[in-house]
Structure formats: structure tokens, C-alpha cells
Picture (cartoon, rainbow, N blue to C red):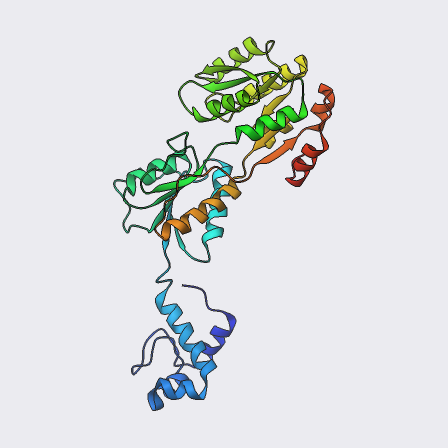
Amino acid sequence: MTPATHSDRRIDEGDRGASAVSHRGRPYGVPRRYAAGLHRSGASRLTRAAPAAAALVLGLWLGVARGGEGRPQIAITGDAGAHSAFQVAFDSFTSSVRGWADVRDLRPKAGDSPRAGSPSGAPQVVFALGPAGLDQARRDFPDVPRVFALAEGDDCELAPRRGETGVVLRLSADDLVQALVGVSTKVHRIGYLASATTNPCGPRELEQALARRGLEHAGEKVSSVREGLQALRRIRGTVDAIVLLPNPDVVSDETVEYAVAAGLERRIPVVGFSPRITASGALFSVSLDPAAIAHQAAELARRALAGATPPPELPRSQRLTVNRRTARLLGIEVPQEILKRAAEGGGEP
């Protein structure tokens, strides 16, 4: 129920009979002077005499009485406040659907006990935020259409899953390799870290993108940050660039610090996946915008409400950030085309 405006309060205060209680058949919230007209002549006479006033009063009354009835409901699952990117995506999604759907936030709060079974009242669509949100949506709402964001999905080939679609958390390997080749023509062999247990799609797509350009790769599969540091020590002298792929099991602040130091020492570029890594000394990063991803997911949610569940999609936009100071230290002249693209995205630390 929306709060009353100043003009609404003035109408109610100007007529003592207007209240939340019906008197003598008068509709709830309709002032006595308008209700009298309804009793004496009926709604049709009132409409003929003052169509604008009648439409306004009856429209306000019906809108309050319905309380949002008829608008689809979208439940949101996921980790509340677990990471700033999740909150940015949550705010963007709710803002995108505000004009045509109601939102029910089912993200567990700090201190909440795990839910037993599905919440009461099934929504029309579930928006699953992050891997935990996707697991929660599949468990609690197996028969409700699901739209996910900031999660990997199940298939590297973006194969559809019954009743489920979303925006896959995955960078375009081709864009990354194109930017790398654009800033350094001396790159021939690229080293990277990959998780031995999770996220197989990113490393596989990077290898394929490198192969399409005739470039070699030196990938290391590791299971922890410690193993990742050991792998960087092994490959640092054998590669022309180091690429850090997004995986918290493998990449940490310590990993970034070591990779940047090794890059400056060996005078080779380091490529990251967030503006923060660029600011830490990487030559550039290709990153995703959680707000744009959530807005894209809102479009899929609208389609899901219409009965369509298209295959999952890759993010439509990526952000490029460049560290000019690192470029100078490496003796690399970044092409104007790449600098322009970074400037358009606000991408210079």
C-alpha cells in the first residue's frame, strides 16, 4: 500500500466522515460528499457530472483496495551482503523490475537458521543471485521458472536447462586475447592459473581463443592459493604474459601481488579481471559490471513471465581498465583505440 500524498490527506481531513471504516454502504476511504452523490444518483450520474473527479476518487480507492493485485511476484534468493557485487546486482535488478513486478527478498540474513522446505506462496519467477542463490532456488522452487546472475550455470556450451535461464558469469576470452595482442605484439606464450576442481569453462575458452590466434598457453591447474603461487614461480620465466582468471579458490590478494611483482621484474604484462587488480599494478583488466548483468537478467525475467525460457546468455558488455603507469614501466605504448575504450568505461586508475 502506498503512503497517502499531501492532497490525499487534505481530502480526508476535509471530511470527517472519510475513514477506513465503511458507513451506510459508503466505500472505504471515499469522502462523504462523494458518497452522497453515489447514494442519490448512482455512479453513472456522478460520472456524467464530474468525470475527472469521479475517475480520480474511484481510481484512488480501487488502487488502495487492490494493493498491487495483478502484478507478478519475483522472489530473490542468494547471499545477502556476502559481497558488494551481489548487493549492486540486487539493487540493479529491483530497480529494473520496479515498474512491472513486485519483489520478495528471500535472501537469508545474518543469524537466520536454514529454511526447512520452500517458503509459503510460490512466486511467478525466481531471481537467483550467485551460486548459493541458484542452489536455493533449485531446492525451494523446483517448478518455478528461474533466472540466475553472477553464477556459472551448468554447461560451458550454454545448453538450456528446463525452466531455467540467466546471465552466465563468464568473461569473453576472445575480447581478452584481442586486447592483450593489441597492447603487446611480443606475446606468444601466455601463462594462466586454473582451478583443478571448479570453473572449467573459463580456462577452456581461453585456450581456444589463444589457439585461434596461433598463440601458445602454459596453464597450471591448482587446488589452492598456495599451489597457485608455486605455479606462478614455475611459469614466470617461460611465458610472455600472465592472465589471472576469476576464481577465489586460486586467486587472492597475495596471488595478485606476486603476479604483478613478477610481471614488472620480467617486464611482461599481467592481465586481471577487476579494476582493483588493475589499480594494484596489472597492465589491464577485462571485467564484468554486476549492475549491467542484473539489468540483463531482468529482461530475461520478463520473458520468463511470458512463458519463454531461452538458453543462458553471456554478459553483453565488459569493462576495460588500463594502468598507464604500469605500461610506462613495461615500456609498452598502449594503442589509442584501447585507451579510448577504457576511458569510455571510466577505466583508468
